[in-house]
Length: 322
Length: 67
Image (cartoon, rainbow over all chains, first blue to last red; front, side, top):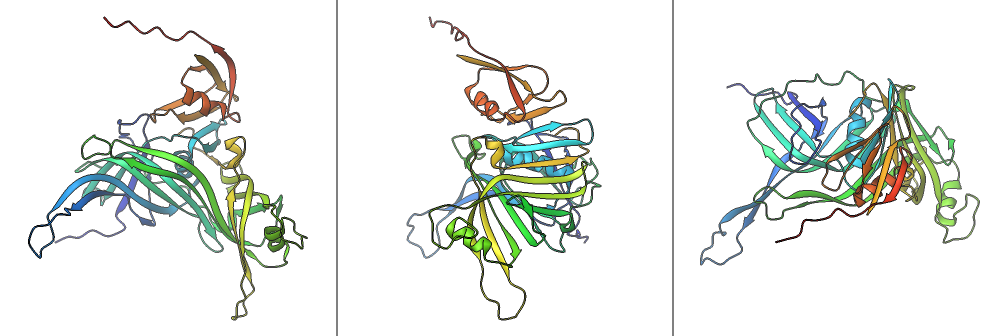
């Protein structure tokens, strides 16, 4: 018997132009570091009496396609993932290109090809949407992402499209990171994590086993950073609304936050930009180990009158269009 | 009804978003006209990428009378 090595897996991803029309030509075939998108049949153990100690019969009452994938951030793939997660994208330039992803009410549907060892198991999942997208990085690490999918249609026993080859762009790494907080760089941010979340539900409807649609609701962005503890400025900013404040204040502290991750200026970089983040909490506790203290900085993107200013990703690469 | 024509603010620009049904809409350097209130809301909010060429009230389409 021949088994299959766990690393013989690739996930094709392509953007659909409309719901119900699978994209059979993937834009990328992505390597993963973890997670999976899988069919999730909904089972119901019938809640009825039957004069027996055995549990009742089970019926199948629906199916969704869901799951989160994890991978390293490559700037070519990131542009598509950011567009799908936020819902809008503007591409400009004549090569290299600049892709600015911003939030909108709807988002494009995607088709995924889940391919185990070329032919061992090939599923196609279509009418997929991204509900949550996280980018994270930490000192001495590669930059990673998590993308949560929810979708409608699974087709089994498919054929691997076989192309394109996986990205040849190297993952971004933490030495590529520059954090600008409150208009200045501090050089002491050791990790960050930013998550865009669209409340997203599958609407089962009356369309049989396959749900009727995947619909987005409220959108928000939140995150954390780990920063070397030097002074009480952020602590007092959080609690008083001013870095030099001495009394509790109703003022909600806000600061501009921009995270640049740049390997090659203009052609291999991304910027995560927020006009203002609300300072939600500074976490600081003594450490009996004696290590230098770090504080956690929890934030949320402050809604702006122009939604593009609330949160955007500006990715520069050699991809002409998504 | 309101009818708005947009184009990308950049000659090489290509703005993509979706209508309420998830069908992709592209606004590039060529004029793009819509009377879809959902899309008008989306495109008005994307002033960093698209600009209004014209905004006008036009007559509602006449629906055929039922027999």
